[in-house]
Length: 253
Length: 327
Image 1 (spheres, rainbow over the protein chains, first blue to last red):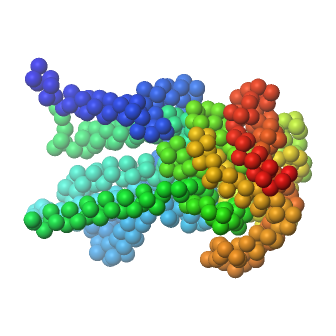
Image 2: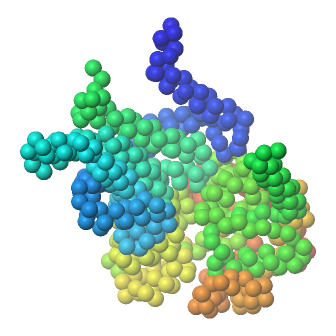
């Protein structure tokens, strides 16, 4: 019994139950007439799932998200590793990503719209601007902080520089690179929704704004809840894939 | 007493003082939420507010980026008077919000590229609106029904100014925009775009609304406000140049660029001629045609016959203002 009560899964479930109960109570008080209860929100979520509006919205939202994350993942890890290995590349690229990371995205959106219009390109760019700096800077730091003793060992065993990079530096950097990818993915979700709220309302962003415009707050919260849920599940999947495919040290037998 | 504790106490007492001060400042102050930035188009309303202030109305204007936020702020009790078109909200939610003055009508122009000569050419073609379920979409839906056509893909780009930019860049071929942007589009790309015949009778675009309990308990403030609005609207329809004269007198929008301010007179002359402003401030007649329009467009459930005006409008303040100013 004691084991069951202290099991991580039980504790996770308990925290979820506490949060949703608090939501239900806050909605019943109500803290604001515009704040629906948890049960109303779930009811609205069920309606949106069964009438097909949500199933139609997700492909719209996921398109810029997936394209943006793929670009950010490939280019981000690539340029991060290159920056870590080569000082000239670092001097050239680091300022760009540091500026992008600290720039307020909402203020940049009008510029993006001016330049790239209101289509898919602008939304993909918003996802990239959100997720790429985190991925790049984490990969860069991971490579730069490879223990010197390891690379020296590789050199003393007559390893070619390609071997040292592929067999020592990258594996040693991979935990931090993956952490960057996870953070980048969650930032990408924020970017995808921001793009839909601030450029043109499509997909889930449209469900949020449309529900808000007709004061249907349960549906609005249901749309927001669904995207959070998807983001959490996606990150969970990413973590599992990382542990089972790339991290023998973390593998759960 | 340790230094940290002292700082904490000092800041706590300062915060408490500020709360008392702000509460004091807000007593008798009506809080108005504008769902748009202060611009040439909202100038007439700002002039009417300043005139009401001369008569003793204390007000505070907050601008929101979106109309929906004004509604949410009203539900949460952070503003008293909002501006927008809350018909479907009034029907769908149980918030006792009522309209009490019509600021402007939905005078919008269907602008299309020269590829489309008539409405018939738009059968099955994509069309771009302001936002889902808004007046711009209702107008085009009614026209499409009249012409017996079905539109193709619908996309939404909030803001007429953004839609004409997209049109000039060739990303959008058919849309519906307001008067100022229709003129701008035809000025900049009149060789590529033209205006198709629209609707004759325009419904309300911007209405003043408030919680009906608040209206009942703030009779004097509401009277001052509505009287000032009705007087300004009547004068403006008779002589549109009054708005710019009053702007100069009150020093409104002085930080706007010179070339925008030069357009104030021509904008109001044109808007008055196009029938954007009702010199009678809407009321029963406007409410009736609004109900017909929005129910026809499917944004209100039920037919114009079954919908009751008193469920959407508070007609008292406007009646009172008409009586005191003379019909």
